[in-house]
Image (cartoon, rainbow over all chains, first blue to last red; front, top):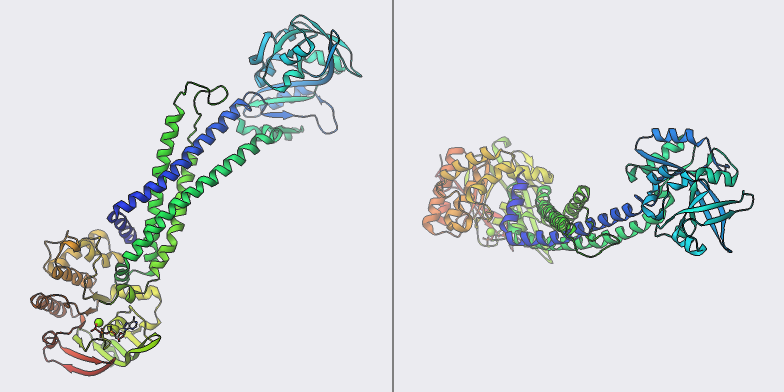
Length: 386
Length: 233
Ligand SMILES: Nc1ncnc2c1ncn2[C@@H]1O[C@H](COP(=O)(O)OP(=O)(O)OP(=O)(O)O)[C@@H](O)[C@H]1O
Ligand SMILES: [Mg+2]
């Protein structure tokens, strides 16, 4: 590989230009790596604040044309067999009108098994007064959101009238108040499964089954397995497409901007390479006289720009990762995002590899033009007339 | 009969056409034997360099043929030309044209490396060659650390290291003083006798030319004189 020998020597001979080229590309790459780490970190943080706590990974619906999932206990057992599933919560939902001392409000009642539902939706974390567990201890009890409690002006111990067309009217005693900081606090009320079953006059059915797995990225897999059990299931990405959409658009425009910066930095390499080709015209002629083919001349100069690109890429990625890791471990002492006081950088090996490869390729391509100019020199003219 | 010639040139014409057409070579015919040590002379602009460049396949003729070892170089692909230049031809120019970023040893190694010889072996062969031209103690010096004559000797070592059958030199001693150029001629002559390589040298120096086996005079792109000097065997 004498081509590499020559290319490396050219680079070390004009050390200063080489180092500046590497720094220029390296700084651009550093920015890209750094912002990618921030992007991934924020995305991760956002997912763990939403997907990991506020929504089920997979939602199972009744079969087509049905209002309910019958024989749900069987289905739960089957879902439990699926790899990666950690918790399952059957839920029976029904619309109701709540009335207390002349004030009323239309709500959705969710009949749940408290422990199962907590393991999927972590409802216990949101309780502000009373207790979810009382739903199963005392029949005809309810836990309401704080906004709903305010609207109806109820407190723990008060009894609400629940009714709805074609439903069995009933009284529900308030045993708890929760606050999830979402609009659901005004419309969602929890009761036991049997309370809603009595209210709707049904038995042994639920309207949906909520599933959580050990890894949110496996939701799609799990939902497909449930599909094969004969029940339509949807992963969180399907049920909340807007989350993915927002992140995707931001991530893409960010990557395009920074990719452009790398391309601009690579122009610096092209121009030094051009100058070097001009300077080395006689040498190139002499190399040709010694038997170096046009292809090899081309290879030498493309190698020069690719090597600079590779080194710039590696240098930049390491610098960017180091910055990200340093800034990620820094405690700012105030909230930079809801509930966290440090910037959640996540440095991923695959991002680093892709960025280095991208930089390498860009510079390889950038080197082609000056290299082909060098390879097209005519030996006599390059050597010149003494 | 034709087999004994290592170089056969027939009806070689080179026209440079940049607005005004200049016939640098005009229907030149020339046969050169293996092991000949010859000089090309002639006034400035007579076409000496142009002829050498054609023989060295550094340029393509307007018409005519050049056979090197029986192979028509005008019909070669770029790859074949490179290989021929590397293995069969050695070039020495008026200015050494060494690679400035490489030391003497590396410069001499280069034709071997291009030929695919292993680095360690190339180093051995190249240092032997440098010793032969009297530069065994200057191997690690770069061209800018050597004198003109020393550089020229490095260039000679480089031209000869691949044992080419043809060595062409365009005023190889053109910018050296007479003592240095005498030394170089002695060196070339010795190498020619030892390895039976063919040397074609352009020179303006009549004394030098007189020491060769054969002298060709070019005028206006034509050979006007071709004489044996009676120095050879
Ligand atoms: N690339 C070129 N373009 C146009 N004309 C050229 C070119 N190279 C050579 N010539 C012309 O061809 C003729 C022969 O030139 P050449 O260089 O072969 O002369 P020479 O005998 O080597 O002269 P010198 O002794 O001065 O080196 C000259 O008239 C020169 O001007
Ligand atoms: Mg000349």
